[in-house]
Amino acid sequence: MNQQGHAAVFHPQQTQGYVLCCLCGTNIMPNPANMCVNCIRSQVDITEGIQKQVTILWCKECGRYLQPPKHWVRAEPESKELLTFCTKRIRGLQKVKLVDAGFIWTEPHSKRLKVKLTIQDEVMNGTILQQGFVVEFVVENHMCLECNRANANPNSWTACVQVRQHVPHKRTFLYLEQLILRAGADAQCINIKDNHEGLDFFFANRAHGLKIIDFLQGVVPARFRSDKQLVSHDIHTSTYNYKYTFSVEIAPVCKDDLICLPAKLASSLGSLGPLVLCSRITNVLTLLDPTNLRAAHMEAPVYWRTPFQAMMSARQLVEYVVLDIEPLQGAAGSGYGAFAQGGTRWCLAEAQVARKSDFGRNDTVFYTKTHLGHILHPGDHALGYDIANANLVNMDFEAHVNRGGAVPDVVLVRKSYEEKRRKTRGRGGRSWKLKHLPIEAGEDRGRNEAAEAADRERFMEELEEDAEMRARVALYKAPAAAAAGAVPAAAAAVPAPRGMDSDEEDSEGELPQVPLDELLDDLEGLGLDDDEAAAAAAAAAGGQHHHEAGSDMMED
Image 1 (cartoon, rainbow, N blue to C red):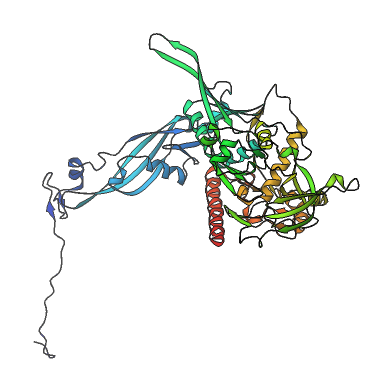
Image 2 (image 1 turned 90 degrees about the vertical axis):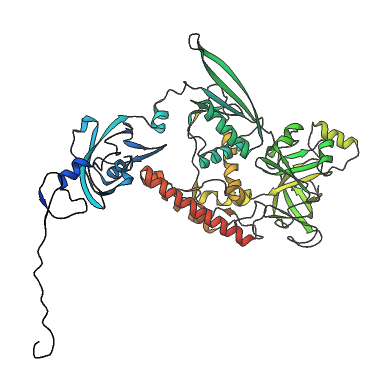
């Protein structure tokens, strides 16, 4: 014991013990298996169950690799993205721990990629074994769907979907084109042709044709019938090759059409009308009686059981000047004179109007009831149907008149902004644009360029006026030059509020415009690759959906 009274502690020198390998007798440090590394490797192979050769598909045209089942990714040779893609394609690699991975150089024309992997796994009583091995990837050429459609013969089709609507304008197909683009329903289409009264879609597979038919029936009131033609027949294997044709007919009723319902159908709808306006069309027809604000929703099967046609269409609209207007029983949004229809408020009113063409010629004045009492003011212009001076040929209308039914002289349809548009037309173009399908013009069509231009202009005006219609269409920012030219026009206009219809603009009668927060960036013009463009498009769509959901919550 030392002077401080503490006992001395002996610390022996620590030495590393060694044991002999149980198989080869090599002097090794102790481990749970009591075997050297070489003997453990001879007894256990941790790479067992891991693919040593993998086949990957590569598109020679665009340089992308197929990520099953149908996603194509772009990766440069010996890049980090390609290494990640290759390691994810190896089956069985998830059972072990990956320590390191890297490419081994191969000839560029050899169609081979080699990746050296280092893995770890637990073997024999908890012993950790690390081992390296090489996986070979065989690159096979396989053309992706986009490149296949670009190089395919457009005449070698299997299914043809002929979409027709028997009306004298093309506005329905302009709207349908935007719905197809936004939903990507044309992804499997190899060619599109523009024919009289419609479009022809060509597909390499019958199932793809049925898919777009299902899409069309979900957005417009349509019916179809099919036929097939035998192309070839192998008598030895009983193999038949057919060409399939689907004829899709869209109901010949469009927005703002004036309809005289058959007596039986009007009775089944609760004695509606029978003179009604078609206020909205999806896969359901929305019919509105402008004299009492009663409305009915008619599904496509109901329409095709009792089909009817429009008595007067949008090309027969006449411009009127509102001389006086008085809402009935309260202001818009309350009482008997208001009706809620999908977020839109109508207001019943008595209006005194005169034809614009009659100014300075006669003093003819018309008195009518209208559903536009919340946006029309004295001095405004409105478009409507001149029933008093129209030459109408409609059996249901004649039967209604013979029964002594009341017929208004004028039916107002919508407010007119043509005068204001004419004043601002020279200030610049629109700050937004639309994308279009690659449509091939038909050979025997007899195109009317002036009528098509008028229909296209009217369709774009409808998008500016109708926020609900605009919410289903993808609008893109115009190029900088067009956007700069549209600044003066936008400064003179007030954006249309979201959630309001074309008939629900502000009371001052300002020119409706598309708000900038509803416009998407044109990713094709930014030069992004496919993966970046897809990510940016998803983010933009998510932002727009979040904005729409927030607006709907505010409306509720």
